[in-house]
View 1 (cartoon, rainbow, N blue to C red):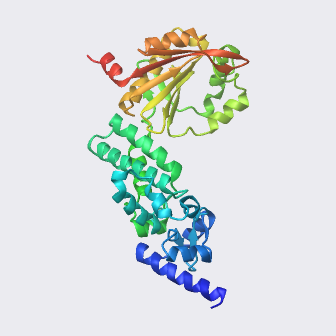
View 2: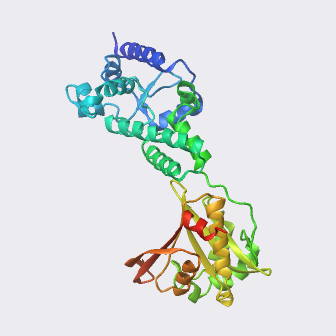
View 3: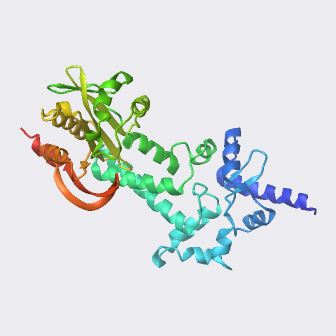
Length: 373
């Protein structure tokens, strides 16, 4: 039998085994393009090892019948030596060998196609984090916004995204459009880890907190362009062009940045920056025009964003990091009820010198106590 005929016969045998596991579903042009970008055609030797049960079945079979495998498809034979199966079992505890056998069979069937680098280590990680993902979804299904649930979910999502590949439309057919780990991950992120901004503007006793517009450029430049305002910030004063460019950019959804308007004039701005992966905490920042300092305006605006953090976003913690020489901001943090948690000495290089950084924070339970009638 010639090489071409042998290859065709092996392809047919591999496809038959593959369809028995995955079903006979069509691959779209988009699926084919995605697979060609990330995988490579299986060699005849690899296909022979698949038929013999020594290598996993292909990750995909293209619409033209080509079996596609990860670039490190044969690594299991290198790492496992003469007996990859026995080597595989050593990655599981002695009292969990039944699970190891089950996962080995799933691995050989190609069911861990979702992994960037399939192997016993990443398989165990995937299964561990997928179980935590499901635990978190269950908790948040019963108690939306639960802080432990968000912590579990954020960690699981971050770890899974580091080792998994996105699920394709073909994967939806063979794994189910909602059953695969990747689809559950995507839905859980959308349901529980996708910050949605509050309705703007926010009105306080004296202030209007709203989105900045290009029409605010001159009033914002009046303070953002000053050396004394930028002295304790992490940047130099803005030029007109720099500030205009920033005003033209959209903030990411996890940032709530608003200008502070007093009697029709922009006198400062405040920002709440939600922190992934759980989006259960945020950093608070503020900048005020010196012409309006000492009037309690920054306190009123920052307090409004803290209230939004704990009510609208349901956060667990709001923090602020300052330059230790910025005594006004330190006093503001304390007026907001924040606790000074740390003072890091000469930890941050800023504008030609090592500076100290005080850390302040307010927990939701403390905020509730402060607002209790």
